[in-house]
Image 1 (cartoon, rainbow, N blue to C red):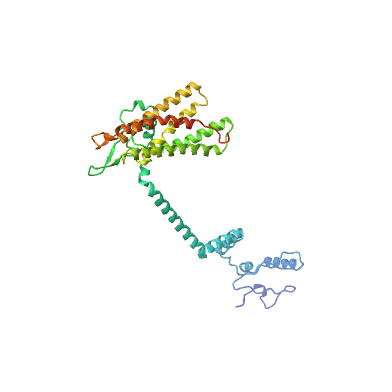
Image 2 (image 1 turned 120 degrees about the vertical axis):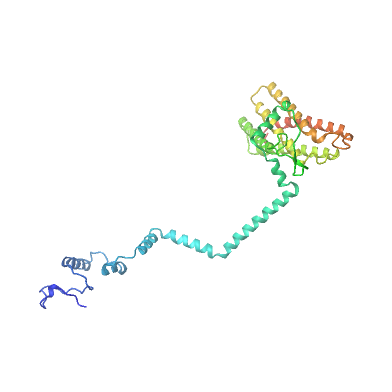
Amino acid sequence: MAHYNPQMAGGGMPAGQQQQPMRGAFSPIDPHQQQQQQQQQQFQHSGFGPSPQPQQFQSGAHTGAPAHPQQQQHQQQGVANPNFNMAYGFLGQDFQNNQAAQLGMQFAGSAMNAMQENVQQNVGRYVSMRQLKHYFDVSNLYVLAKLKTLVFPWIQRNWHRHAERDATGQVVGFKSPRDDNNSPDLYIPVMGLVSYVIVIGLIIGRLGVFHPEDLGYTASTALGIIVFEVLLIKMFCYLLNVGSELQFLDILAFSGYKFVSTIIVVLFKPWAPWWMTWFTFFYFGFALAFFMIRSLRHALIPESSAVTGINVHRKRRVHFLFVIAMLQFFYIWVLIRYKSSKQ
């Protein structure tokens, strides 16, 4: 449909004015805008003007409708960081579509589960995890009470362990260290071993002759003494027919308590006079021997009325208990003789 133009009223057109292209319907023509467009076209034809924009950006100007806002936002994000979009899309799509990667993840999960089951079976063959948790069930009050007993065993009056009973009243074992201060544990021996190795390393470093191999040498010496004592006690228990009264983990726990006394003597040795060092050595040696006698007495020499035939090996067990106590001096003496592995 033709557009009515008031300038063309009367059937004529003013002289010297060119005919303009016809606009869309109901689109008014501004003379000032028309003059600016003519000047812009002449400036572009002269070669100094900017190049014309692509058609997709000019469409909004011709039609009078703005571009879609979602398309503009998507284009701005893509232009802002195209490398991130390409990498993110490529990695995500490649990982989801790559069946080999998914199979690899499933295989790794199956391998870890199989390894965990294998470790649990091998460890459970020698040591029960339930029993091992029993020896690490400690509290802060228990640790403080046990350390006081190791340093001052003379003030301890009750050395009997408390039995644990089931719903029917039958004895099923002993209470955990959390509920019984006389129960042996493995927390203090493990922490004592680690602390002993660290203290020896610090003292050797203070002397200026420290080497990294000294930590391994010290730990090997300490573990060697523990293994020797445990094997010695197990051999005597077999020869003297000591059954379930003394478990393997009980022996390991009692053998590891010596590191508490050894650390105190080691700390006195570099700074205290020689007579104080020897006094500390003999005091904690006797304290540890007394602790071992009172702790192992109820297991090695129980009441004669409770166990039939115990009088046959009673004298031998007393001698064996005395030997175990006296060997504590030798163990402490070996442990405090620290030296560098390069010497």
